[in-house]
Image (cartoon, rainbow, N blue to C red; front, side, top):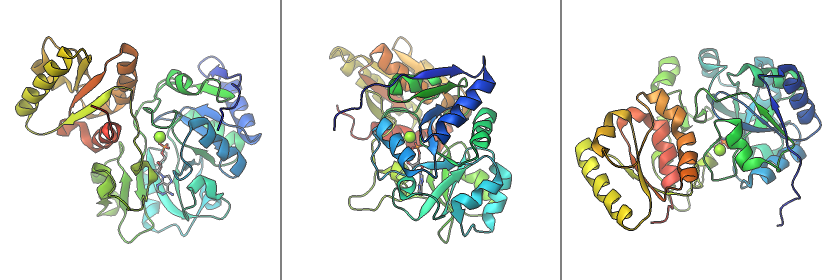
Length: 348
Ligand code: AMP
Ligand code: MG
């Protein structure tokens, strides 16, 4: 299908004119159009979740497959009944502990929510974001807002308005610049519709944090591996290559010294072939790669999560051809999941 002609994209800097940012965003959403909005996790591409035609525009602008559902964002608990039904009792404790915040909870879907939002599933993922600007926009518009990450499908998620603009300028009418995202990876997605709560996507809210609130949770096996052929994707983020820069990514995991030896050898190999390799690692591992092109993601778990997507985009800007990723346990599940998805299908 041919692309639609480019739109005029208006960019509003909330730090300069917050009131106009909130008003324009709410107006755009209520008019059945789409807007790029900041959240604490990554930038979102938002539409009125009750308006199926508006939500179609999100899929079109992103080039996102229709069988990948969107997360619905609410600003007040009272909005939840419009979106979901049969809310299990334990979820109350989760909402009290983690909302507003980066935890999306999968519930049974209310009939108000068009099928396009949930990609035909009878469930819906809901969260209350921890970003005052986003909350004010949702409140002003008065409707729940469906929003996936504001990147072209397959690309690394945007953690600044500029990243979103790189992907979506001319494809959306409005971008609200609300500064850098503080978390930097997408929300944890927790399915509460089965017998045991199931993590479908890891995020900054860890299994341990959830278990402290509601007891045992399971991790969907696809979080750390590709889907087996024929297996139905429960959280379709599991199904596609995601988060990927143009560079090929190879992930190395295990004993730090052994990995460093392997990465150094692979680096020399790609360097000799003029494929512009770079090593991605935590600060503690940087000394293994002295004299080589290195991208240090940070020293702590939070810092590494927060910088990951920006560094993947930057790698493309610099023109690296191969990313050799030194994964260490301290980086955590969310980073591991994203980098494995980004590496899937990467060409040698
Ligand atoms: P993103 O598009 O990156 O913002 O993330 C949206 C993700 O939320 C999807 O890719 C799914 O992983 C997850 N999700 C949304 N709705 C559902 C649902 N009803 N059931 C399971 N996972 C969902
Ligand atoms: Mg996404």
